[in-house]
Length: 368
Ligand SMILES: Cc1ncc(C[n+]2csc(CCOP(=O)(O)OP(=O)(O)O)c2C)c(N)n1
Image (cartoon, rainbow, N blue to C red; front, side, top):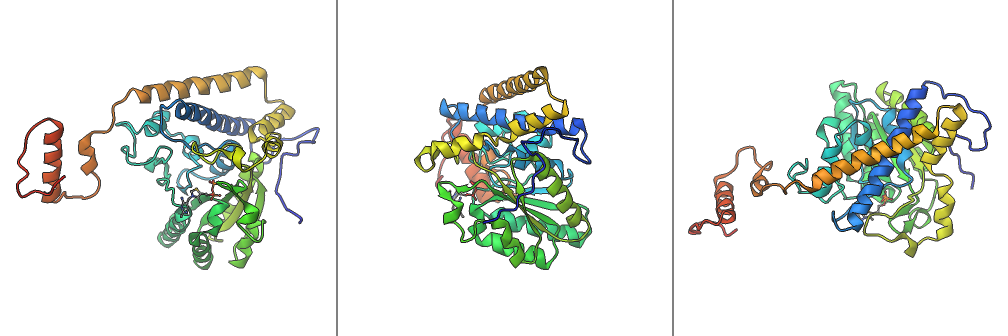
């Protein structure tokens, strides 16, 4: 089976030049964005393994799919992610204390402790709350893009989902609607080759998932998802088309989930060590480092400084988040009604009274 794959970084290239439209500083920013995700993942996994947080999701090996895409988007563009793209708001400059507070579900958690850890939401970064339900974000992104087109806004929408999500109804209806309405939306199909333990070949009759785009009349492209520059260039082009009213694109970012599905998974039960080792050679951070070395914009001192400073900052924020109290009981009642109904007011008063050790009559009230 011939497998087209857009690549910029050829590992055997002796000499490389700066890619068009990108400066040395841009490449460094992208490299640093990927390192930040890696360090965050290492830290959150350690916190989970030592029982300090209950759960985490990591994206080892998939850093380029996040950084290459977001670097080519504008800050006004809406992001509808799966649970594996928290690196996107990190790149947009989200506060690390907000991320750490969410991992602990403390009183500063923007999700107010109501989500599983690793289900971030960052309204000011146009990063829509992560949902674990596979595929739902796809049609939400299409709706958002259709609305932007109708209103004449300049923003586009981008949605990320895995190979497993291509079997969801929402994938099919999302692509169809987007094509018919020429919605300015980018579909980032992050093909990390597994849906938990299920490999792509058991998921689809055609492993070249980008080809599904053709059936909907949408341009489809298969990109090396471990090549941050190729991901950037493909995204830039597709985003420009979407912004110019030329409709959606499906970008299959071919990569490998180098870690476990989540902190509750053990991949050694369903894939070989040889397979996992073979992907280490394609690590997107190492590849970018080699590319930068060839360009002469990398040094040992730079590398040490970047990794150490991220480790220090991320440790500092997670340690601080651990010390914060839980969200208050009262916050349970917020955000559902603009005007709280009397029945709920009474339940709130009862709960507060009970938590403060006061006795209240239950007469005529709903039991708590
Ligand atoms: C509608 C729905 N069905 C099943 C699940 C259980 N589930 C959670 S993650 C997952 C695998 C998803 O794989 P993929 O879309 O490839 O994304 P990846 O985890 O590889 O990033 C499944 C089946 C779910 N969360 N939602």
